[in-house]
Amino acid sequence: MKMLIGGKWLDAEDGRTIVIHNPATLESVGEVPRAGAPDIDRAVQLAKDGFRTNRRRPAHERHHYLSRTGELVLRHLDELRTLMVKENGKSHFWADIEIRKTAEIFQTVAERVKDPVGATYPMDSIEGCESQVAMLYRQPVGIVGAIVPFNFPAEMLAYKVAGALAGGNAVVVKLPEDCPLTCLRIGELMLEAGVPPRVFHFLAGY
Image (cartoon, rainbow, N blue to C red; front, side, top):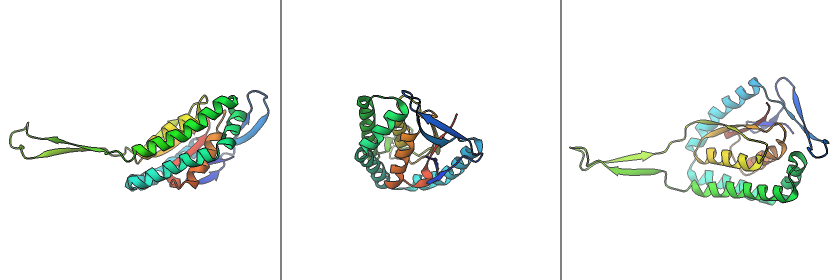
């Protein structure tokens, strides 16, 4: 597989790669580009545009693409579970739990997108402001940098990515170099779910 930047599957600019091995058998199960500084810079530049897009996207649209991602993860449960067992070394039992949890996180966070994001406060504690109210409104912060560990890669990816996108941000993700394949496949499902391609970027590297 290749890394996912701006909705495109790309090699590293310098051509370096990482071979992924099954930790139980040491058999090679895949190869991914090894991202370097130029690849990260490219992802960040595209994420700036993605952030401008996602922050203006209505909450119901963000809800839809996150919820749809969860549905697709469940639909591809067998495939994702098998891939995780091969690259991560988890048992079938634990891989099954993790992939199901990944889908649940996307769908749960999707529901939170619908929650009210503002609050109002009376201003009558200040003389002359007795008839006024102040409003607090949450705004997305920009581009989120996320580092996903090897031990629960799909689950941690879901927590970080779903949360960032739900808030209207963009995200650049450093995937675990030992086991990025399941996460990259989830990235493919996110594109299928309608997640805007410039709002998330998945790179493997050290």
